[in-house]
Length: 335
Image 1 (cartoon, helix red, strand yellow):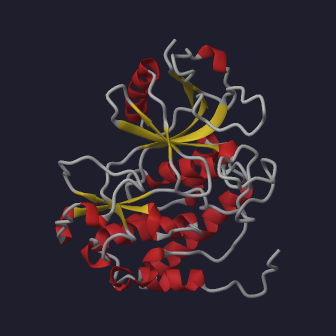
Image 2 (image 1 turned 45 degrees about the vertical axis):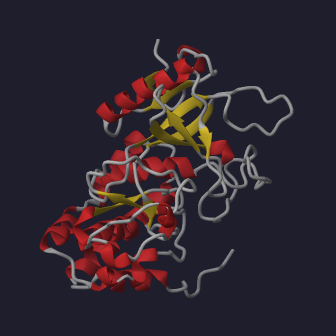
């Protein structure tokens, strides 16, 4: 069998996937999302396994994060193991101390449960805000981190996200060049997901129809090449949704909150999109595709979707809605 196979259920037998020269095997969980893109990633990741390509461990962030490449060296996917999340047992950066399922770096998201939220964000977005194709998978690779002395290669539950070629993130460039509709789409997604961690580092800035390769965070800087961006030439791509859909209400963080684009009114197309949102069908889909997502998070989705629809239909803009959500929650026990 191939290095990457599809499985209908969460449980999978790692022995059913072929191990290649670098000890790698991968098996996607479920059949949701863009099957064509997942199959393409299957072939490319398989070629990397067969040629002995070693994943690149990224130094940014607090959790384990790896870029997998094809046999030609082209970056294909960003992989995040659940047991290497912040505070998880196999975290490679020293942030350990809790077991999977215990309250995490943010108490409203448990240790080891960020990956399922990454997949949920993609399934809910469906291309509206351009969340890259993301899926859960069972994966083994010698490049992963193991903190026990034996360091035996084991199969891990991971999130696999399509690598997006980009030049910078939103912290590297001025926000004046960002298209209004791109900012609005990300903002609508963040409100809908009750995203508690939308900072500038997880908004990628990509030149439309870019002719030169993307930059992995940390490999380049604005001073390393000519920027040459103009207003209509830029796309924004939201990534890192592990802290969305918390189990309880908490104060959110929206980097775009004070950008001038957020104070501009929604377009008629955006209002039509918001009006069509249906939390019941969204929850049914998530129950079918990601049954491990906790019911408390589904309730947050219901609340945030309702809030977005009510505020948008009342004429509030993105900044006004986000400002209300960003205020400290009065009367809520911090614990």
